[in-house]
Image (cartoon, rainbow, N blue to C red; front, side, top):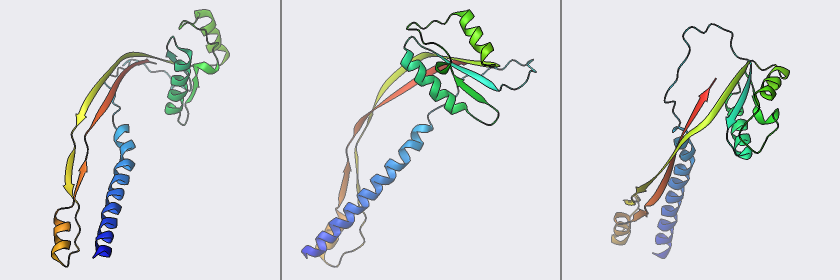
Amino acid sequence: MTKQRSSQNFLAATLICTLTFCALAILPVAIAGGVKLLVSWKNPVYSGRKPHRVLVIGMSANPEVRADFEDDLSAAIKSDGLEPIPGNTIFFRPHSGELERDYLEGQIRDFKIDTVLVSRLVKVDKSITNVPGYSYAVPYAYYRSFYGYYGTAYQQVYIPGYLREDTAVRVEANL
């Protein structure tokens, strides 16, 4: 009888671990789906050529944040025929958020950049959501006695509730 109960416990634990692993595997896909474009505008009379060398500039007074943003955005928009250049690779990083116009125009000319993508953080909203806990019965189809049936019918798994913090970020980008 003890051996039977330990095998039931082992199978129930295996099922719980498998379900947990599947939920954790799906989590990054669910998070990635949260990005959306709110507004887009294109000049209807533009008939110029397609951009090739794009200078990516992130506007921030913090040089580390700015460099990380420019590197990440450059990596995200890289594709065939498009060569993004993070601003932190060609600009001297002053401690202020400002760049001198003459210096900026000289760098653009020297590096043969044909397009500039400038982005800035507009708004950050944080919200906290309470996700309530729940319980469910673990299905187990093996029982040969009353005790096996009772254990099968009343095995409950409880998933505790938790607080989830969501961050919504609004970034304005101009090309």
